[in-house]
Length: 421
Ligand SMILES: Cc1cc2nc3c(=O)[nH]c(=O)nc-3n(C[C@H](O)[C@H](O)[C@H](O)COP(=O)(O)OP(=O)(O)OC[C@H]3O[C@@H](n4cnc5c(N)ncnc54)[C@H](O)[C@@H]3O)c2cc1C
Image 1 (cartoon, protein in one colour):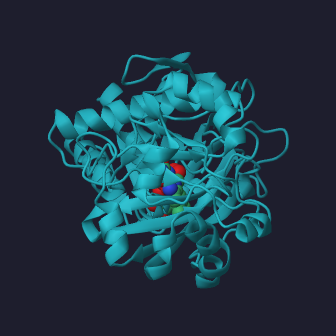
Image 2 (cartoon, helix red, strand yellow):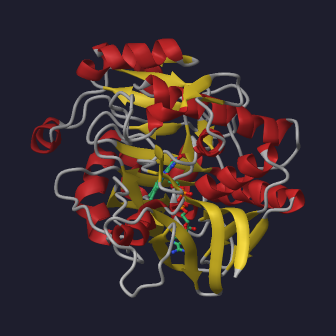
């Protein structure tokens, strides 16, 4: 049986960043990274809309995102590793309620951002007042202004993961791709070799992982398996605390979309900002390489909490739910066609919509990314490493600190996030 100090499971952004920071801080430890797919970023990291922002209502999320953004910027600008990071800005189009709300003002005050007036928004091609009949039918707000986050933009997650993957290999982490964990084997600390162990009264530990390539053992296991965490942990009685929800992305293209995408709002950018509409949280992410837009939404009521291994996008959902809202604000969408679509899941922390990073027995769990795991991925890895090292605080890249137990379960202290998209 292979024996390691630490085994990290999952080669999405969370697992790669965790393996990187654990090995960086503990060079003598023998660390392995297990991933069932043949390469990295094949889970939700590869299915995301790949936006980043530090505009959040919760201070915790702002910290996690802004430090991760600083690190990614360092990777691209100082280490010259192209991760496709573009500071396009994030434009939140706001109805009157949102424009005046406390959390918009607070988010604006805490992030590098500026308010945008109606004229500028109209010049981009947006309709400020959707047609009255449509507005009434679909409950659409008029656009009263916008908040443009400047430390925000788009990134290429496969390239970002490629950076971490290269680093961990150079540092000596043993990356075992194509290795699926089939079972987390809970055993007694002091086995008596009686059938039926572990009994109620025996102290328990995870002795090994049964994988498609044999048994793998470690002192500590770090599960960064996103929505798959529940299935892995349920048989052990450890609660993952998350619920999965399907999320879909529709790529739309056409000559008018191509021209729209080419108009930056932020100095130095070559494309439009990531735009969040004021109603129903529909958003549009520019994809400058193909001069297209990715359109998506974090739908709540009516979208069940459920998990399927290979979630499929629903063209009807775009046609009947997303498109009518999006077109009411951006009329050029009428001439666009859907050229691609895909789906994944958010691993929701349904209470405060922020990561869970906790230890139970000798297992560390990092999940519950709630739709913003890439933009907070570097910070998550640092917090996992601090938890492994028994530290009270994790030091983030930009020098800010996070109390590790704040993201745990028992002493959790995280305000509810209002800006989930
Ligand atoms: C449509 C959509 C849009 C999104 N948009 C954004 C966005 O704009 N910005 C942002 O920051 N976030 C976004 N997200 C969220 C983001 O994708 C996730 O928060 C993030 O990718 C989670 O990373 P992870 O490493 O925790 O999980 P994953 O990337 O899912 O990685 C988990 C890995 O574990 C592996 N695994 C699972 N089970 C096993 C097993 N038994 N054995 C071995 N390996 C296993 C999987 O194969 C997978 O590679 C979006 C998500 C979706 C679905």
